[in-house]
Image 1 (cartoon, helix red, strand yellow):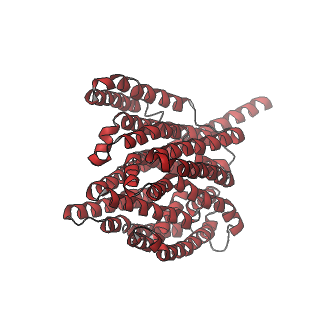
Image 2 (cartoon, one colour):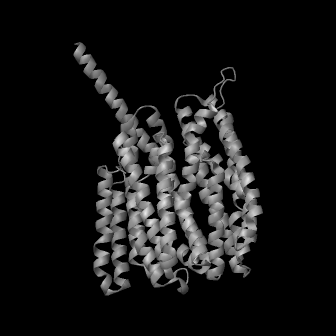
Image 3 (tube, helix red, strand yellow):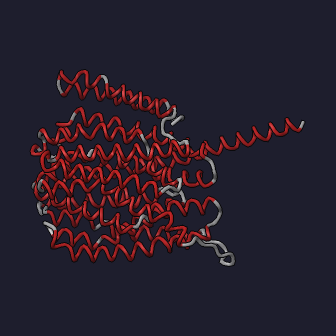
Length: 494
């Protein structure tokens, strides 16, 4: 009888755990879907910004805009001090464990230092502006740097509460729409210059930061507990997790943006514009991975904190299947129709080097998608120091190869360097997650997504390419239809 009761208790516990895992996946799917809608708008908006800048400006002016905004984003990554990841991690853990009273201490520990450092960084950029080719662009961007940092950190704190709506509405939808409206108005008015385009691009960060602060303040006040029971997180604990992420975040963004700055410095502003245009399709994959990652992060942190690796594994594998299903069709379509893709930005961007850049980066980005949100999973497992080492190695690979290859190979060398860094930046953390925590992205659903998209978009369209672009487009349309039917067919599992 005792044995029967023990077995029943075991089965009950297993059923509860399984049900809890399903609920986590459903919650992640809901948050991921909201984020994906925002990511679609933001990703297409990023492509539209690149297109507007490319068609409204000369290649040299467009190159100046792309290089200056890359400096702005890198400076913001430095000034954030890793606080977005730290705030998601700590708010999620505290909220999961019923310690909402300690959230206030986490917000103070993260937000005040980021505000001070972002202001100091902005002053530093103002002083250093004469060192750049277009100092007026750098000065303008520096003024809005604190607003950018504040927006990122404040929205990250709301995601710690598993609220994806504010990030989507304020950042992905609101800020992106404001940028596009401003850039389109300038282009239609015929007043486009590198300075006016930059102004329209950066101004929306200010209202977005104010809206994020207002929303977080409302949410935090609702969850404030009885002041008679004080609770807090120590600065040592918060920064012990967050500090490595600060450097890792800079290096991670360096992998995405430093090559544009290096191409501009080593090959010129015109090639920098060509390289930016040729690589912008990558935005789609980055936005999808970021959207899914933002939904996965708080749940993965809570699962790891509760000692539930099976739940974390299920989250990782399901999210990877979503990323593959949504990004591989885009990557393969861009690779097969590279000339059509480049011609969208103007005939001056259609050349052999730009085409090679696309073809080099497509397989690298497909591999990155197949590894899923490996970077986020390592961070949510608490291994931000490992993450820092991994991304630093990748950045060294990127910078070293850029210095070696750009002078002789131009934008093609930069593409080779970025692809090599992407492979390193995924393989090392994947090996660490698999060996240490038994976490990997290759579940049954992931394997099906890899097989279906690989066969659908990688077999028939290349086979008909010799017949001409119209046949290739028709084959891609057929593959897209089959892909949509498959997603609908397996929507309940996904």
